[in-house]
Image 1 (spheres, one colour):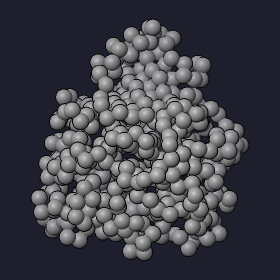
Image 2: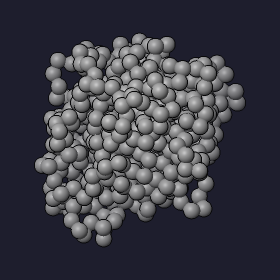
Image 3: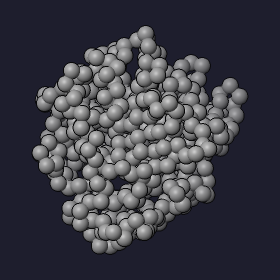
Image 4: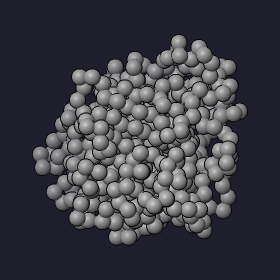
Length: 455
């Protein structure tokens, strides 16, 4: 695997290692907006021209089709056709552009196919977020050994990352409008090809860290998520309230759980790390939600470098394919997935001595433009490939000023032969709807959740 050095020419100095947790210097940050975009990606395209230069993302595109949260978002690239397909027969030809997880899937399933399309760098950011990101570059500090972030607000905290923890915090604090809401479904496909509908959930995402009317957080939590379960019938009315801390030395993840059976709300301290997620059929663990979730203290996160790889991207094909057509017996229908070549940061996490987790190692591939995890693979304690994960990003491109990527993701379990997909939109409504303004946070407290449940 050919991986580019993380020391970008002209950006980093030899003094970088000595200041392992410090913000970069003004001279290093000067690359933002010149050789780098203001959010830290390489502005130029790839040497062979496959990856184009960054030109403003989807917000700068014209002629986009009409769409919205009630009707969905049509594919802006529907007229394009695959440049080539990667299969088990020709995977050796593209090995340097494939992750070990992708190669594992191609070897396991001879009919697995990756249709590769022209690359479009569609990530977009509001101007105020870009301004804050440039400022964060010289002020943000990593707390402890990846346990938190200080002196950052309203932008990517480490646009020129110095270690793996900083890349992962860029993922956690990646741009999202202050408020988003969506209704989605999740599915589990077992080894026989039988599909289990895991239920319908409405999620509300609140991101005080990206409140444009503030200049700093007023408490330790940068993000809240409220979940309401509509189905299955046995879980209807169940609610969760998740609160994410920006500094784990001050607070842990907090998850409140409301049960309609007891009409009580309680803390769920077990909802973290490798505890299986019941609402996803136990097919994934809590720290796999949205590709990675929670505290990083069980693993050493090493920044390996950057690499150009083929990943799912601009996946409007996915969101516009019916469930019956999309869910194949062993893997998602290749006709419903768009793959593109993009530059990613590679972060390799290895389990610390004396820590316990089902994984011994976990590798993440983080898109340089969106700071989203686009692919991952994990390994069991014998070193065998365990689960392979992908996100399937598309955007709510008609919501000017509040455009963001979807949260759809899924995992293939190579030890069992099943796979899971979450945050899938399979109805003509309920698509991601966002607003730049933060709603009243008093409506998202344990007390408010309990009161709503009683009604």
